[in-house]
Image (cartoon, rainbow, N blue to C red; front, side, top):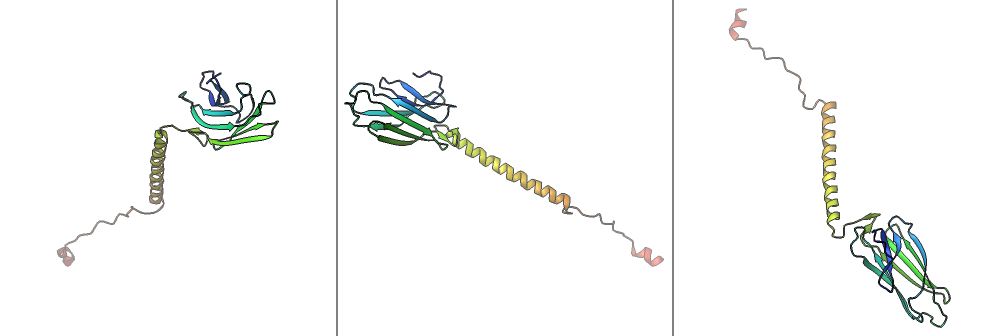
Length: 178
């Protein structure tokens, strides 16, 4: 079920251990699926959700929707799953059984996704971003202050002095002779 391309973002784990992709990177952030239990007369469903990091590392379990006491006497049981990924990285899931009207809901935060960007799982990438912002901020402030100082020097007379006439020296003897 998993195509191995690394494009899967959120998946379900099936009864045989395989992952069934719900959301892929770049897909719309809403899904509606119909689910059927793995075996007949199964009285409980545990729907496990996994996040697949873009770098292809091991999927991370982010939540489980438990649907206990499934009606087994009605033949084939069908569950309807509605999933939405919000702009803040919150995955909202609703599982309903239409015959009985039962609902189970779950909201889970998708790890490593904040503000539409993928963060490093080790935290080092975030630390580098903070340091880079500080350095760029300081450079921006210093450049702004240097520009203000340069403009002040150009507009005002700071640092400029008019040349004074050379001192006239004469000796007292020359003035007395005159």
